[in-house]
Image 1 (cartoon, helix red, strand yellow):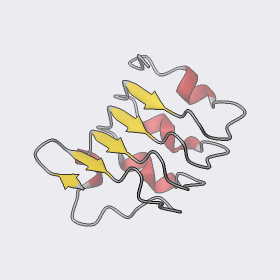
Image 2 (tube, rainbow, N blue to C red):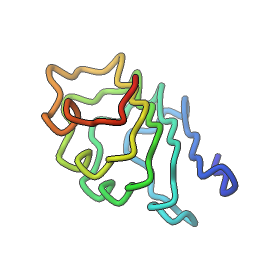
Image 3 (tube, rainbow, N blue to C red):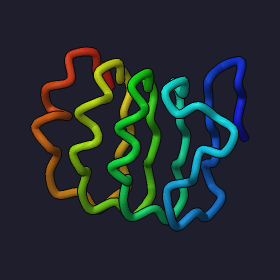
Image 4 (cartoon, rainbow, N blue to C red):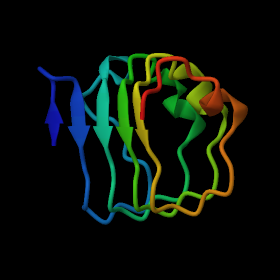
Length: 101
């Protein structure tokens, strides 16, 4: 589900195995992404285009690491990574000043 008015993408619980292509949506405009309850293993580096991202839920997937694309998410306020196989977070996540959750 893509809502252009609220700048949101909700594909939670669809059983996705890969990060979706943003068809018909300007990636820089997305503010909220819900991809929990899928089977996603990686977040591609091209997601550094999500500079307006404020809310990201990728809980209960199969992530084992985060790449450097998260450095660009300077507006991020909420990040849900629970239920993945992450052993550590990159320094770029630890230093996010706007991150509240």
